[in-house]
Image 1 (tube, rainbow, N blue to C red):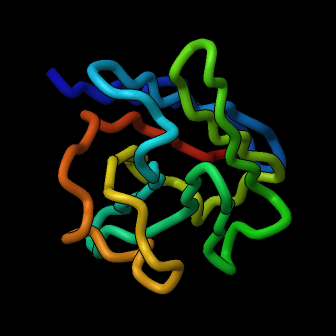
Image 2 (cartoon, helix red, strand yellow):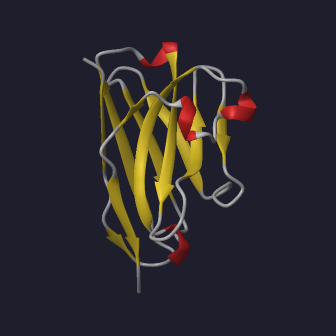
Length: 124
């Protein structure tokens, strides 16, 4: 069956880095898009980044600091997070969607499968 497993979160100081991973099973990445979302306490879930075979997209708040990538051999999507800020603290989720028009990647309702989430805490 389809499974997504997010990992790599932890405690990091401001300005530090973390690398999140989304391990996919039950399907091949090239037929779908994978999005990273995050949810902080008291806030709505928001799109962070998205990748399919032809595109990489980022929220303005993370552009230039985060990089999304695919490892097709391992069927895994990574999110490299650099220059972390306090406001990056959240639970991070990866999710699967059919390949979308670019303007829809931020919308959770279009994603059909979600991983369990991994907690990122940025604190001094």
